Length: 468
Image (cartoon, rainbow, N blue to C red; front, side):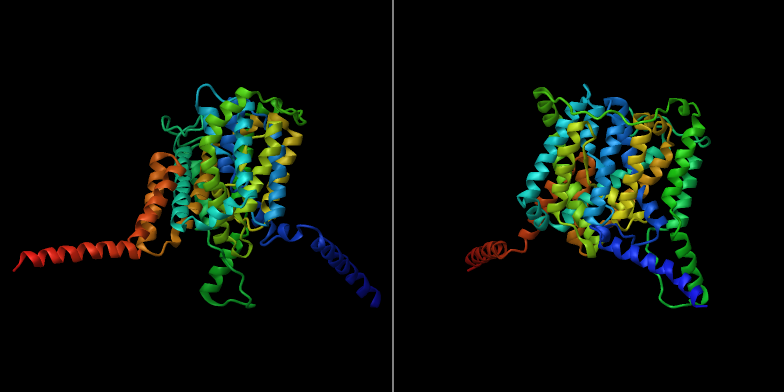
């Protein structure tokens, strides 16, 4: 009897021994699962609705090396997951990508790298000197919410175009010319079925908390148990894996085009003309977008979603700078942290740094095993499914603006969002939002009241003097 007891307790002791050693390891707290493994895996693919289309466009149009990008962004994911302890996303620099693909002549890979390095150097300087932290603490919350709302709605509008129309990723602009057919392996029915599945499993994105009571009686108890069961399903991961399977069903010949092994990584040669073109055409429009969406909006959103692990603007800014000051020299895609990616990963279950670490491991395997030939697989990925993932990420980001409690705050937020959307510039909307916020605050200053008080008193004196 004693022997049996000893045999049964030994594995438990070993497991505790491993747990104690793992918990003592560096960054173990950041990578510890906060929910189930399946939920973290589901959240890991929550930002691929923006990642895949931009990477695919840059690979096809600008000859970006996909293998190098996958390997470097894999390391970015793993390191940022360990450093921040939240599902901090690694997203393409969208403005640079848009210029590289849509403008003629297209930016070359060295010019794209130069634009990324210039943007990274600016963000690193702002972070290292503390200026980014200063901006973060003094920028009004309604203005930040306006930027988040505009970005979220922009993602949602693009997602609807992905779902409704056939797309050509030789350009980053979503097409609205060829309606998507209802039937087929990338038809409307597939996209609508994916949306319905995600809504049934994840609902509106609410968190179902575990009850400490042993038994929950009645209808409410049954509903909560059902919701907890559904929340354990990695819905986004299921949809993404379905898309990967359909890649091979749509074009079985891509199996013959797959070549194993990564591309050879080398340092780029960047000429003075590359620096000039990359800075003027790529970095200048990207810098304000990165400051607002990649740092300030990300920090505000992380404070909303993870109040116990709020990240600083300094760390995020320095992180973006270091990533690109290293990777861009080897031809990796310029990257940043994005509020939309964070919202998407949270929406589908990501709660810890382990979520993006899992995504990084997946990218690393794909980059090392398939190399640049993986672009043949991505080119057949159903665009409607990417639109579905992007739609939920955009709506989650836009919903962060629901905490505006006064009419004045909502007014500033909506004007900022409207200008950002119609002007296609977050910087323009940000500037208008700041001016509007200051004008509204000016109305409440004592000097403003005294000025109008003197004016009213003068008018009263003049009025009395005219009446004998």
